[in-house]
Image (tube, rainbow, N blue to C red):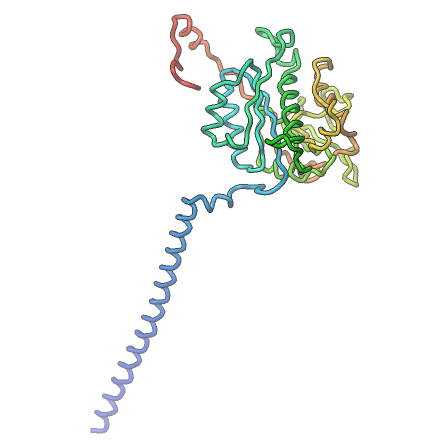
Length: 329
């Protein structure tokens, strides 16, 4: 009899132990489910925030900083829209860039207007025009280096920027806020990191950095001494120039342009001297501000788009037809 009681007591203890284990497990599972539910709700809330436009800033570099006026001369050609579209995608990612597009034409074009609208950059861009004088215009099969390009357009942009810096929409003087001017040609490739670097340019300084695939070299770059001062440049093409660097390799603090209204580009300078022509009014080599990891990082490349072969299109046009009839390419 006692043995039977002990046997039953043993079973009761085992049963209660199992029930206890199952109860503890159920509590743990409830917490996990609650946590999963909270995690799912958090993900959903994040998705709703994204849809409301509240999460996108995490993907935008350089959300604060001086306004960077990016000056882009452009002209009508088969690859124009493709070139400007590439640039527009970069500018969209850098909110403190204000795009100054200057067309080599007698008036602004619908193509550029449509591009700014579709890229959502209408509020932080301006569309200007300035036609190159006929005697300075490339003719037929002239090589692109034969005559200076973009002179009229860059000077028009400088005029507009100086006026904007001097006056606001009401014509009153603006506060002397810091801004940067960069000549952003449409045939280059740009990293968004470049604009982060550009935002660190100090007042009254010209910032400089390397440019890839230019001047017959893999990279043209400023040469620094141990103290980080610019001694010169490693240029292989016309190294005797006062500033032997590419247009994509520098940006200017806007106060320098206001203090030196004579600083602009010219038709009267030798080939390759446009950069030197404007910089000679603003700075000296040793006073330039080296950027991009002490000029060790390449953040812009002089890539240039290949001119498309359109022989079939030309033949089609002779018959009075076009493959892009009614389309903007």
